[in-house]
Image (cartoon, rainbow, N blue to C red; front, side):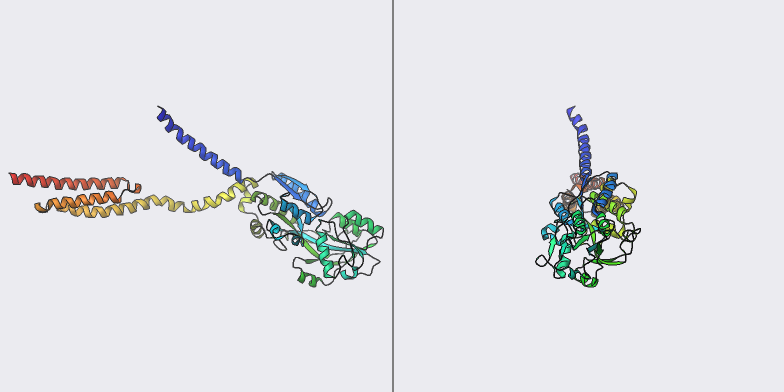
Length: 434
């Protein structure tokens, strides 16, 4: 009775174990729900975009949190330390990372242009960046993306802390010191939509420098491009700027850790596409997100996404379903493709076994034909030959794959031939005695 119960239980236990294993694998495929996005200061373009991402990710079933900070350099350090899962990073700041730190991060693409704004007091005779030598220049807060880029461009023009007063001021302090006449120039890297740019360009005592020698900067720094800020592009009602400006620019990248879950990457790229594919002040429709102007290694998934767009799975199913189904397809599709071959394997196997057994039947047929015609003196030797063949068949078909009906039929026929030979041998003995 107990043995019967055990026979019933084992399939049930095995089935439960298989289901539990599949459930565990599905659980492992699900992405973590929390995504922390590191941005710049509140009111800046990075922070505004971060809030937009937050709403989109919340709708996708994630819990997104926006963390404002000084800027790109600080964001990179947060990402390296695992304190954030994504962040907007300004072009030209990846060189602040050590090689082993850079290896821990990857880009999901560039998202939008960021002009490099150089504001200066109108009363100063400034035509080139090198005209700012010896002046009081705000180069961005410590940890901001503006600071290393401003330092780089100033160094190209022979300006450094030994010959010029370089100040790490907040956006509010820059406006205050321009109004008080305590500041001569300031560098900003920001979208024309940023509040900091609108606040500065409205100051009557401040002008925006139109950059000359664009190609010289671009050839020296590959991550730098250029943009045209049209007359009235920032504020059309007040006609700001008052004339067209040629400006250096970088792109903002969406950066993530290399070990970020594919489901989170998929959700971030979906948000990026919804937000940044639209035409902007400087961007054309569908120009961004882009694989261009990325200093860090581009995510392989992002590379496919930016080249071909969302997969057919992304277009049909919710993100959570795609996260589970996508990796399973790598297993299922080959199996589906191989199904015709796999279904034909039993027939092919049986055909091979049949040919193997038929070769024995060919030999056995010769013995059978000689049963009634062989000389009586040769019958014992013939019996030994058939018995040897029987032993050979047994030895060469021990593997489980040979255990089928045709093999047992063959052995039965061998025994039948042996019986006939032995019967004839007995008959010959009886006849001689008579």
